[in-house]
Length: 309
Length: 169
Image (cartoon, rainbow over all chains, first blue to last red; front, top):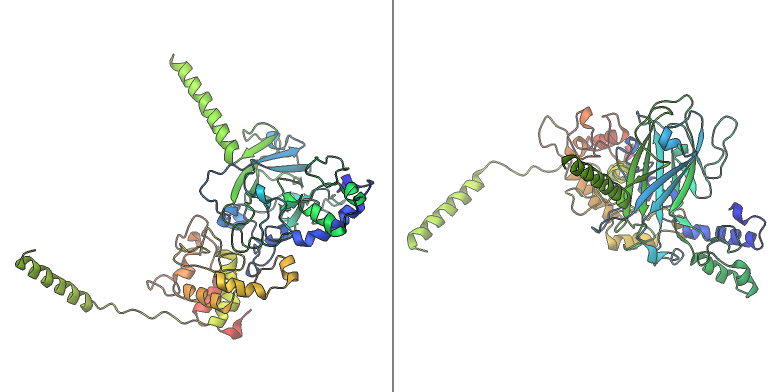
């Protein structure tokens, strides 16, 4: 929320966003992973497909509808040598996860305060584990610092939160709009709070204007401090869901049908040990992998043909 | 059909029918473990490990598990939803199963609670136990209890061995 600081009308907008927050927290919010299963939570499982969850992933619940999934994930790190050159012991990386090719629930953006009308939510959860399935390094949400001892100073950041006492990280399923005067605000996707106030809009009308611009998240960032000393290859287990906005009896709760889930595992070697990856980021799932395999296949065919001529 | 052929078919039918009735294979009654212990101790294990839509929270499964936020009986869910407060909704807490839904789960679990051979435990214990620990292969992600010391395994085992409401955790 740093972009709102010092700007006209920012404080009321933050307050209104906070007022809306309870209504926006429903199923698929990050804390639901830590809730007991007998009240509908994840029961402590992360569902990234990792050994911690017995290999169970988002796919155990989020079932697609037979249409070819389009969604994929693109993972980028800063410093961007993480996936290319491996992790440097003790280095803090900012890892950004993009849910690309979102296609489900787009018509239900802005419906999150309407009760049972449906609401577009997306989600991601990740964990970094060593070969034995134990948490490796230290996770920390976006915008939160590490203390002098190297521990994360808070469990909740702006877009991500820690789960299971820091063993995993999950993203907020919704993203609130920016004030149109804020840096990075996109016309059409922001709320012009100054204009609304100037027009004499009531708090309820302003809250409604904000809720209409709330949409499913597609970008999440978190931090990871690599273990020091290094402990061998570490796996980034990641699951993401492109939610369809609810099609079941009570979409605020049990909405698993028609979603697309992407589950990926990225191996990260210690610096100096190559795993053969290339580039500053990783693409997984859906169209990304398909196009990459098609490209590799075509190159292979061309080389074969050249060899036989 | 000729008269002879008709007589032959009738005779064969009688032989098959009489022969079938003569097989000594009576239906064995299912165990009747405690419903109360099931509700307080076993159901949470099923909620956490078995109830996902891709697993047993699915009408296509031989054993089906209803669970809050997952598969429900629509009419019962509507009743349960009325009992849920706004505060619970905002905290992400889902309506609890009704007694009808718990009874459904109890009967489903009871159906898998009798061992099919003397050298194996009941399927409800045998299948979720990891193969490496002696369990039966279940599914790709089916090794839910790493060993017989797993809390979930012990709870179900206690239920099958007669644990009652007095032993609810």
